[in-house]
Structure formats: C-alpha cells, structure tokens
Image 1 (tube, rainbow, N blue to C red):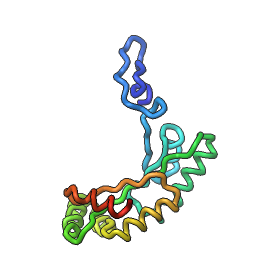
Image 2 (cartoon, rainbow, N blue to C red):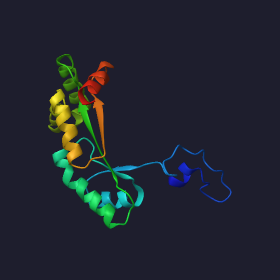
Image 3 (cartoon, rainbow, N blue to C red):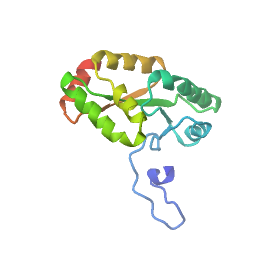
Image 4 (cartoon, helix red, strand yellow):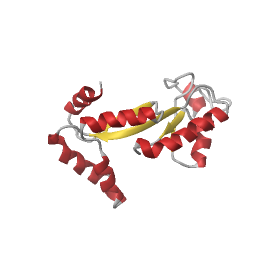
Length: 161
C-alpha cells in the first residue's frame, strides 16, 4: 500500500499509481485493536493506534503499552494515539442522539444501549473527556456528532475552545 500511495510501480513494467497526498512519503495509518498482533501491526505498518470509542480510563493502559512498544522498537518520535467520542449537545438533541446510536448499534444486543448511553451530552462531560484523554497521553480525539444538525459543531466549538 505504501508503494502505491507514493506513486511507485508495483511490478516491473507496470505504470505507477497516481500518488495520494502523504505525510513524509506515507499515508498515515492508525491501527485499532487490543491484542499483541495490534502492537505488531502498529510497529510494522502504522503511525499510531486508535482506541475506537472506548473511554480514556479503559484505553489508557493499552495506549501506554503502544507507546512503550514504539520506544522499545526504536521507532522515532511518538506514535499517534487517537480515540473518538460520540456527542450531542442541548436538551433538544438528547433523545435524537440516543435513538440514532441505538439504531446504529442495534445489532450488538445489550452492548448497543451501553454505547448510546455513553455519548457525551453535556459541556462538563465533553471537557472532562478532553482532560481525561489528554491526561492519558492521547494525541488526538475525534468528536463524532450523533445528531445531523450543523449547530452541533458550533455547540462543540463553544464547549471546548
């Protein structure tokens, strides 16, 4: 994949692919998962690790494991450590947010409501999450709105900036 993204030909006589915008000649890859194989993949192919949507307290020990493995493998710099957080702000958005997540994760059975109820829905929950992920050494936190209204982005900006 890295060869193609750089625009290199894959085989003798083949045409090079159109290059994709890259960072340091590579497309950044974040690897998800929580196994020893995940760490191997991060070290071999990745630029870091993503916790998916798990809370900071749950993800922090594995993030430390990724950073320690990165350093132990002699990789330069620091790995990117990322997570995402579902959110909706405003009482007018709370029920729509919960319904969306319940529908989206309905296939997970009893785990779906846990995700739906875990979305950040107040300014204090948002700011607490930002601090918790920062304290755990995460370099990136992606906020995923669960209500399809553009004002959610403005509300998020007002909450965290």
